[in-house]
Length: 446
Image (cartoon, rainbow, N blue to C red; front, side, top):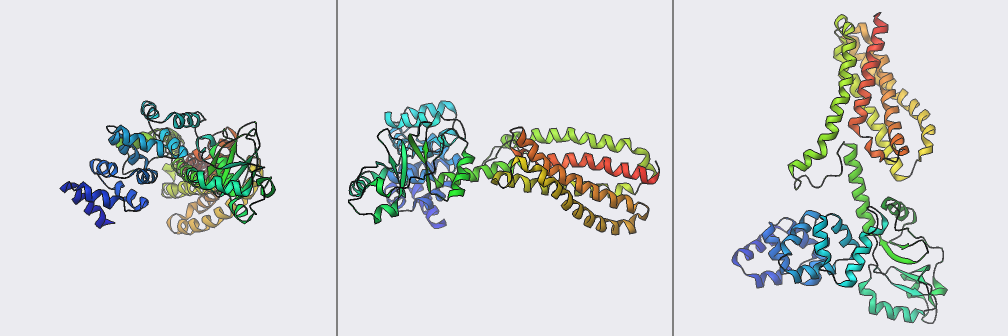
């Protein structure tokens, strides 16, 4: 890989474009995409302009969003090359890319499409953001139930190269309503005289184009399919969604949830490529909000100033106890967010889980209390009981907060991942301070 990259740079420097073109077009598309990712904007455009039409389409599919934007920007001066590329990209991949572009750039690129491709692109972009309609492609094979296997195979040989997948053939009636599907294995093993209607499976699974993409991810997992049809309200087949698109969506959703749990505004692209201001903007709002939330912790501590002055050793255990509550809450929240996302638990299951969480957190709290009591017996034996009791209650409180917050967010139609670790930690901190000093005040007689 490194040798090829250096060779390409040397050929560009010498302006030996004939040799460079031959070398590029003999490479694997994935390998070539990885090399282009490491090239400068000038180098990548020179290389891209030398790719043949088929390879340029395949390489583009494997580039990062930022690289795709650089390529489009660099090809704007070459309308033919850019037009060929935009028209050749699969409709679902093109839609996903257009979503990332400013509106004016998308409108300019739409003008480069043929009338047929522009109609497809506008239709797909017309579906709601993050809907299944944005994922689907109209490139599939559909046959009538009365068509023979021989005619179907002949049709596939003629038109199959334009289909997103040939693993499943769809059966439709005269009004193009979906009535069944045929696996490619069944098609190949069938007699040429048989019809599609004789071998098709009528118990098919279909998606609604207006539903959220997360539903498609779940359906693909539940039914273990490589492709699923998309039908409108009347049952008419309007497209298909394939497994590779679903994998991309699941990765994006997981990344988004991970960033939300870390208190980012939204998912962040590669930090190496992201602008400093964009990284700042994604993080500052939550951090400022949490700063003001933590003022309550300071206020709570100030209200117990007399207790602190009388028993200074309480300060030593404050960070340890507070952090334990936040950590327990983050653990519990992680488990609940993942379970809600995977569909393992539903909103109505919260009351079944809270009793179990109380028992688990009680066991955790008692175990941790034994450990901290051992430390306190050497450092401050006069507050061993305070520290032990506080540890149990703080861990239980943090765990319950961490368990309930995702359910509360879900109840109000918010992403449960918004119940971020910093948010849970801040709430647990406030509760922990109040619990700790309230027990200390009672036990020490204040």
